[in-house]
View (tube, helix red, strand yellow):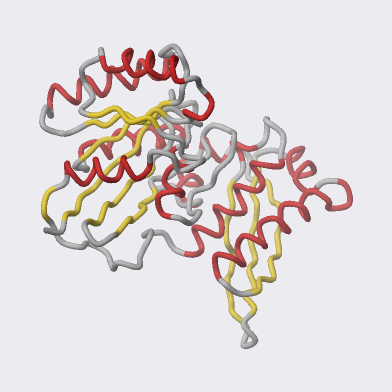
Length: 298
């Protein structure tokens, strides 16, 4: 009996949602960094084996919106709950439930009351950073909330507990068709993934005040006859002062971002890449609905 279904993964920013999904799929699709708000849009990940096809929806971290982009991200996260068969809530090993996690738990509690038959699985991530005694205390703390069907400790970074999580998901899915070809791992285009790789490198190398205002637009991707992909991309920032920081002294920072991104894009595309980057200013684009849509957040 082949099973299939949709699963959303929600949580506050920077708990490891994209790391988890990239680990499940075995290939990087979502940008990963140690900064919040790295994931901005809903990204579909497709896991297929001989028994099931699980379609994961990676959503932005839930937090109070501060601009149009933030409102889009929150709406994206909340709307996916109604569209899926199983909800996964990802937390880290924090010993106390903070304000944002309390907000999410209250939201899930209300959802559970309206949809009592929809399973909610809790994943406690980063267990490689905590002692077993404290982990048992965490499991007990969350179990007493009485809203989770399953509680599974994992380490997304080390792929610990991932197989158990997948088996548990299969137990909650119904018999169904294969919605996507078995070799398909995302519904996002190569352009989207290339832009995410470039944005990730910018997030990784830049200062704290810049990353949230970074967007990447792929202007062109053209393949030459000799199997070289020419890619032209523009990195957008919100302030003129940020432009200089991204370019760096004598172009050093832009070169660092480009070199690191090119190596990863070559692995993705399995061919040589000639990557050209530009930097432009689009003032306060996160507060402009038309610009938020222009950069692909629709």
